[in-house]
Amino acid sequence: MNRWETEERKTYMKNYMKTYPKEKKRIQDRNYHKKLKKEIIDLLGGKCKLCGYSGIALQIDHINNGGNQERRKFVNGGNNRYWKFILDKVKSGSKDYQLLCANCNCEKELKMRMMKK
Image (cartoon, rainbow, N blue to C red):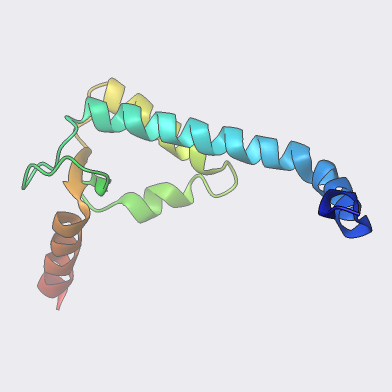
C-alpha cells in the first residue's frame, strides 16, 4: 500500500477540504494586501526618504507618529481596510505618510522616545 492510500492521508485530505474555503480566502486577502502595499509604495516614490534604500524592508511611516491611533480605528474592519484607507489618502495627495526603510524608521522612533525623556 502506498502512502497516498493510507487512512491517515484520507483523514488529512477530508479535514483540509473542510477548511479549504477559509484557506482560499486567506490567500486572496494576503494577495490583496500585497497589491495595496505595492501600490502605496509606488505612489510614495519606491525608496526610503532618508537614505534612498529601495528593497524589501520599506515601511510606510506616519510622519506625525499617529499610526497606532489610526490603526485602532480599523480593529474590527481588518487589515486590508486600513491599507485601502491609506491608499485613498495617498492618492488624494495627503502628506501624512512617507516611506522609510526599517533601519531609518527604527532610528526615527528611538529619537522620538529619547526626546520624550
